Image (cartoon, helix red, strand yellow):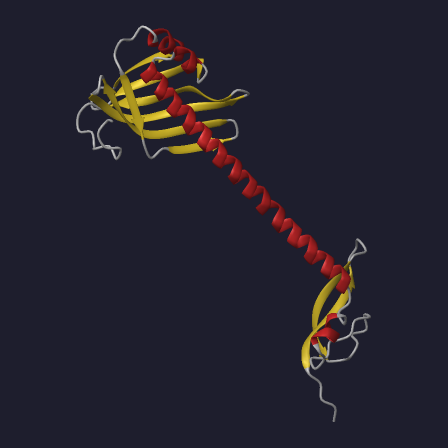
Length: 221
């Protein structure tokens, strides 16, 4: 009496497009299914079985293409993350330089960081109804040189969101005038990537005079 091992066998079919497919069937090991494919003998070595299935070359090509399809997006994602990291540093540098120009009253340097047509909105926190004031960035530049007070603004723990050539920086801040604490709040800056680099195009900020939490930066130095 012959003994047969019932194992999944590979048979082939011809699709309408002329490509060959693979199907599974149960048949005695070593026997033909009548389609040109033979059932693999489970007792063969791995090296022998590697060449037994029809379409083996095509399967290896498929695996190579699959690996390429998976790797290309991963590489692109890594490159995008790297570029975003560089943009994040440049964006935060723009915000810091803007604050530095307020301290130094450097109008020329501030002009290189701002889009004059932009507008800033200040919202006074804690008042009902909510009150706010706004002015164009050009007005900020016009008043900077004439100001006598020493302004210092600091920020920490910024959240930066980037999408292509636009970005938003959301960050807590505190504000000092002539070395004395004035108020705190949250800045939300809009930025645009220009040929000259990232520039502030506008934004909104809150002004909170009471109940400000201690800054992690400590006292003003």
